[in-house]
Length: 126
Image (cartoon, rainbow, N blue to C red; front, top):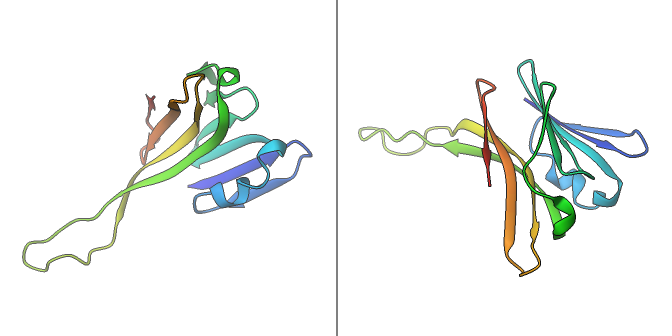
């Protein structure tokens, strides 16, 4: 799994871990966030708020209706628990999230993201 941030000037930042820390100071220059899981590519076109998943284009919310817009990038983990050995097992990554959130005209937080499992399947979450 590789995260990529592409900026308007053509520069690119790569990370094997979540990429938000590389984005937070450059949101005005951000063009696209991509997460690669296996052969699948999941893109968020930042300015438009549009997702592109393996050539399929869709939008979850009109991003122009939001203020204080920020990216969502996360890793969902679970930790197995063995009743005999107790806690201490390594976390298992179950899915990754990619999207954005912002405030609507009433000040409510609106989240729009896709949840990508380790097999490359995704589902929409709002």
